[in-house]
Image 1 (cartoon, each protein chain N blue to C red):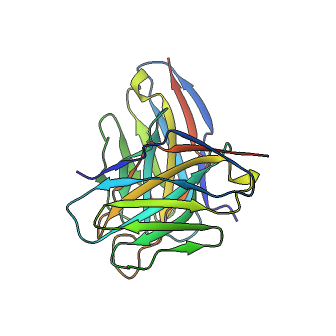
Image 2: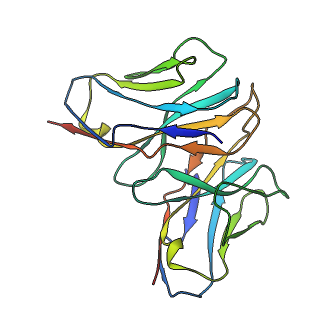
Length: 114
Length: 117
């Protein structure tokens, strides 16, 4: 079974600074997808960024980027120029190729301080 | 843009009561999902429907049933609610998943907070 581990239950960062959230996963698969979702206090789950395992290039979406290390099974999220609106729970998720069962980590609560 | 709509948003049940959570999406997505979220844990998949007419068990299906009524609607039923099913329930949909060239992210509803006394 696939497992996703987020080792940082809580983190904080000053506004405008950079923060990195960690995620590791365990799988024997070679093809899969990785995601970071954001859940603000409104409770809605919002996709932040995704990575396909067969792509070596790290995904980037504006201020959000990932460091995907396939051999190490690591998928960290970097948020640059943090904004107050980035305050939320962040979930790392894994999905096997050709399978609809997405597995989530326990989440990291990020607080951006003014 | 409605996206994924869940009803109700809140519900309190007594142990043993039955309840159906409704979910509808207006994005013409093929795949739909039901998750539960418990404190200190990520979302766990209960059931999913890869396409209209099909349903499959996820990670935690016990105590639940689902119906994919049509392409738009996917309901989750608790036949005899138990306190262990107190949770926040999320419905999600996606265009297609699991293929190399057409994997799409899941779009989530706002959740249903369900308490069972």
